[in-house]
Image (cartoon, rainbow, N blue to C red):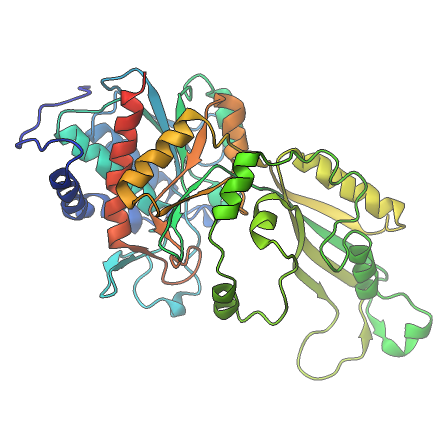
Length: 464
């Protein structure tokens, strides 16, 4: 398959305002060509739309000159789509995205059809997955198409698009290990970047890890009358006591060895955190918070502090009115956000051992998820190159570096395979509403993001 083609239009000088305007207009003109991607309800947790989405992606990559397109299915789960393009430079940039999305429910809260992308009067495009993460891949494909139409690609380019990110990337590590040679690159661009509430373009160097599990305890075969509480144990109280034995009210995790191997953040990382935006008043207003922040330095905590969160807890009767019972069973759903230096599976076993030492061997744990933490070197040449390109596109004062996000993802799995810098940048925005009804993407962010991606690929191609 041809890797480049001759332009059929008058070329515009690269890097000029005229070219930028042309790219932004092209992003709108080309949108109908990529909109079918959003229309497919590729919901991994429900197993919907997977084959159709994979077919669309493989066809689209082939249509813009990929010399190799494959749908890997050798490791089980949903296929991983891989595409490879030749270019003027041998240097290789690889893009990671995911094609699966969250379910649209509750449907009644959507103001438009979830899988019918529509342009809104407020300058947004609304659809499930438009922000997380289909819009970002559409932006990258659009940049590719523009370059394909105007002389070809400046460097070697790869795409890896998985279909299980929304369910924990449960097979992704197997695919990464099995196809390590295919994924070799000089730099990797991750999904998930955004424009924050202050209007600043963010460049993120990693993620916190995550350990998720259920805890449960049963103290009897049946619920009992609460008059027996003077001499009968209560599963709800048993669970509360178990939880209190592993975390203090101020958030300190009381698990032996939990903090022992945490990697300190670099001075460059500290400097970046100091410049990060944090709108305390805005957070309070949006969420209706009724309590104080749990730390005096929420910016640093969001990057470097491990957490233990009760996602949900259930026991006994919670219906209308009074039912005086002693619950026989209690359950809590927990996630722990971990930081570089901690190992997800080790943390899980540490918690189990701590519960046992504290006298809670009867409290069972059920493992749900483990994702490792990862922090890229923000002083690496590629990270600095991405930062420079961002400043040329968005303005010198409109770029913020985040050493790692407070969320999680499979970046550590990729890092273990490619040993190359990973940078998370994209075209989302703070109010996108990912996972929620009426998810959206701002049109101008989509246009600017397309131009940024093109310039970043050019910068990689220009490196020696």
